[in-house]
Picture 1 (cartoon, each protein chain N blue to C red):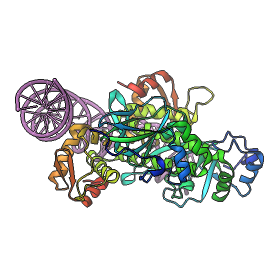
Picture 2 (picture 1 turned 180 degrees about the vertical axis):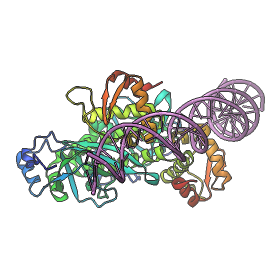
Picture 3 (picture 1 turned 60 degrees about the vertical axis):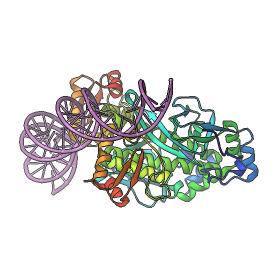
Length: 235
Length: 235
DNA sequence: TAAAAAATATGATTTTAATCATAAAAATAG
DNA sequence: CTATTTTTATGATTAAAATCATATTTTTTA
């Protein structure tokens, strides 16, 4: 698979970006002076947990999962990223190693910006700090909510929640009910903090209850209201 | 119990503050122009989850627990605060309601600063944004780590971890081994995301293993290395 | 396209921790 | 200081989900 439409320069970027929206055309051009456009094949690692942070990654197109390593190699998916999202900014700002591993779920195009360009833009642009603070508060809010969900909800509720997160993150295909992402049962397990087996059983159960349909890796949400209900107060 | 030593004005504050350290004496004076010093009796609520955020709380002296409400009333302790820590800044910055309930674990003195003063200081002081970003990244890091811990660790590991968090947050008494905080088993359970009964059993077990000693609400860590070991790879 | 590998599926068993129940001890209030 | 409430403690039972085992399907790759 070859890059078909390579990312343009930042000043011509068509994505609604997380934080660079407020920049002028000139500033955007500055930003992209020495940027690289990289193609990441499905399954490839963009950066690893613990690695020294030198770059800001800006997803032009694709789907990325961010995972953290837990006890005896078990992974936990902490977040996803797709078009317009940036990765690695926390490590750059905090001058810490990358806190998670980023893996492409799909063939992805990701722009790699240098730490120096990123910092020079922040310094010149006070609006940027506010945007970053906004991003961080949102992430923190969802992380804390996720903590409570995982602690207090059953596996069924958590798997239902995971499907809703996938829907909110990647949306549906044109049919309006098929999740616009191919993801393994193991990955859903890593989202919900459970095992692959339990996830498979739960998906089968949700299918029996006519809430979802399964077709290989395609997951079709036939009754979203029931699913929402399930994520919240599952029997 | 009466206030014995009321908090001074900010420019005379003796605490190593989370974010106001970098301010000049003049700015600190500005900050405290219309501040209130409030006394919160042990057990009283400082603010509630979902409440409209109007103030920044700055802990002068005391111990605060921050909890979020989960399924059918079960609480999760998300964080603690003590001298020098600020509360509520996230809600002020994000213009959202308070995301957690703050309850005094001890008789506490807390300075209440107005949203307006806080914002005027931020606007005039670019350093502040960086400090806030730093705080947020730290909180986010620990929230994500906590998520993995709670998902992947056993109750014993989580309770051991909770004791270590208490030690890191509040330290020891003069004897160098008694936790400097009186906290109920139920609260430890709310930290570890388990039940009160399981917490009591686990503490009894840690006592049997000569890792801790229990004396009413006093918890004495007699073998911290074993406890650390226990939190990480508990058998 | 066939073989190998990986992912999905399902059953049986075990383990962990929650729940239910009750008693004892400690803290608080009157 | 005593009564009442709250917290701590411990046992018995149940329930949820992990683990172990194995089969089937799907995907990958040679």
